[in-house]
Image (cartoon, rainbow, N blue to C red):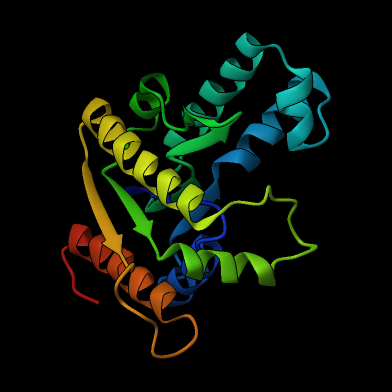
Amino acid sequence: MKIVLVAVPGSGKSTTLKFVKEMLPDVTIVNYGDYMLEIAKRQYGITNRDDMRKKLPVEEYRKVQELAAEEIAKLPGDVIIDTHASIRVQGGFYPGLPDRIITKLRPDAIVLMEFDPKDILERRAKDVGLRDREQESPEDIEMHQLANRYYAFAAANAGECSVYILDFRRRPQSRPFEHAEIAAKFIVDLIMRSRGTKQ
């Protein structure tokens, strides 16, 4: 099974995927951007993600995107792809999973995680120094989550796959990482059902 996991930056995707790996060690977890960077290194000598966007002409960038999708699609077994449904650009949004990419990836499901923007801002505050993120208001984050929802449905339509929305907005955590654990359990259950077994 191939699952695409999407959420706004700072939502806790990495933590969720860590829990998935603990519950299901044989699953393959890939970061789409890492695959793109490896291809850009091999073909263009690019050394970091920022340079991909700054130094590659748009057509070359798109080519790298497509090559990454083709390589990921060939991976055997159960694969979870960590990527973005939409990318914030100059006050607007750019599709993270355009038709030409999603049709190459051929996922079975897109899992979209949504959170209270205040929770996301708290998580981002703990990441200070780890990531260089633009300051956003709760309203900015909510708008990005809405864009993600629209883009996820559009991608699912082109890729002919299901969308699952894990909406944690009105579900406060009773303990640290509870949302990540619930999301991980949901993903593991999806995979186990596709294998014909129950976790």
